[in-house]
Length: 333
Image 1 (cartoon, rainbow, N blue to C red):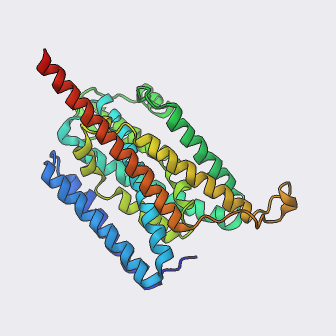
Image 2 (image 1 turned 45 degrees about the horizontal axis):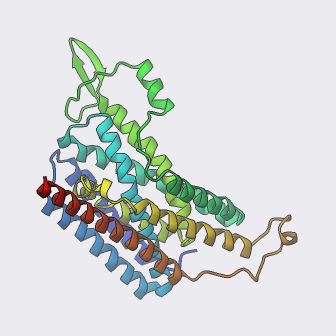
Image 3 (image 1 turned 90 degrees about the horizontal axis):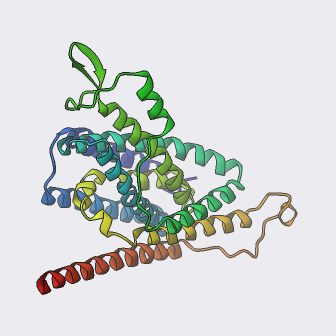
């Protein structure tokens, strides 16, 4: 159950809907490459709005829901930045023209929000009825964290899934884009453009992202309103972040390690919560383990801030050292 007053939730969802429409369906429809200044202003606006929103939750519902929102938003935002790596690979793999990438991102992010909404509803229904689902979520996050660490340093590649490969076999797809159109005419025949395949690639990739992000946020809060608003704020301004960080994503070398720490921490937290409310008959005879420690919400926020902050700072420092070393070698030659 939500601790936030219903009128506040209604007004918040209306305002977020306006933000989303303007960000993705109005601004995102303009096929142009945003400048650095435009990206910074756009991202800054939504970051400030998220901070204000958390403060408003603090005022109307108390500190606990507010800290849960900040924790969830930072986690989802960090995961969204990591997901931009895959978006870059997809755009490059399908040679999406630069002036169309913003439009593609707006559609992809819209799909992501819809999918996460479905996952949130399903997750809420599951955890309300079956507390043992936390065990699955927890071990899945630990597995994801391990994958992030073990695959670090390997060249990430995009591989078309079975759906897209099957699609290429059954419908005619031209190799040329025709603006934002999904269909075009070539030599008197009708073809689908690569835009259709790009949308499917982004959409199916979003499903995989949801499998990571939704268990992570449920490890921080069980309030569906906080879960949903955290995800919305994490997605707002993401396309501008894509262009701002485009050339810098490969320099955030330690970000996956920071995210792995966050996901592993939340995974352990979920497992501890599952033990605390245990109903499985083969664990302690189906009784809760009351001696299991309860990790406070403020501790979750602290771990998230430190893990992501240290990873980002270490990445920037290493990138700067490499740049200085390269410049020094150039002068010596």
